[in-house]
Image 1 (cartoon, rainbow, N blue to C red):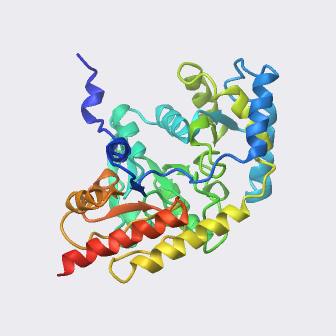
Image 2: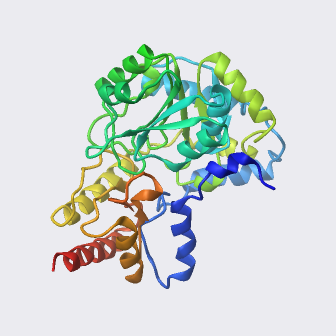
Image 3: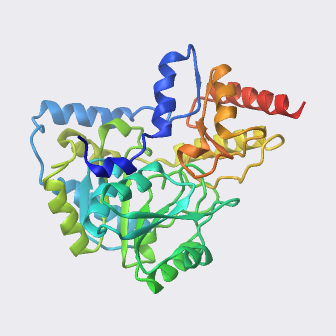
Length: 368
């Protein structure tokens, strides 16, 4: 009855954990990857004003011209990249889907560093592409050597998530330049998911757009401004690719929500350095509290830690955590391995304190 493409699509393991929140009384929730802070008040007011002023109709599929101009100015200011080839999308997931639809044919391969954001694998499979996984354990870093070992004649695309969900791995400009050069040798398109740009802690963030002419930048306002439910993102890509993505959007997402597009213009005026500082402190607290009992590659960005389970499989350890009202994500929800689990530290400090106490207690249980 259903299309064959669904045979290769898996339900999100992260969403399974999300649904279990409803059955756990007073959960200690360190599972879902969304900021713990709300949309800034001035941005909320901009959205309310947009609704009341009648900004409730379609925008051009490419997005509001004023928002696209502001995005273009931001890319120039922050990354030194000059482009007006920009498409406002329905969140980063919308941009990822459109990029894959525009560039992959049935049977084409797409390199996906493992661990990975679950959308990559499933959207590639949905269009008949072939996910080609690159094992990045134990340091979780994509390297030119790892690309060379995985690429085949069928490979057409490389996914890069910087900083990474679920591991928090982040890349310096030198590392990005080396990855871009290796991708160019093999004629690969790079889909660079940079949604955690504001959460880079140990060195300045740099965009893959600076280093590759075959890059499709995909990002969103969701994480930086606490608005994952607003579904506004954008893609920047070479003109031919951006135009193709726009045509595809006309017959799928149509356009991102109009009043929220207008509010995002206001969001771009805000200084978010305080959020970066706050989340760096959360990273340091969680890593410091867990590193004695857990094997951890210190994350350089995003808001996740990806420790190795101290005993059993990831599912066994997660079930023990749920019994203690703690919700974290099993590693196999975003990897082919069953050896790690994801902790989101996008939570209030008191919740983090409770969560690491439970995790250390569970680790000690296995050591006895």
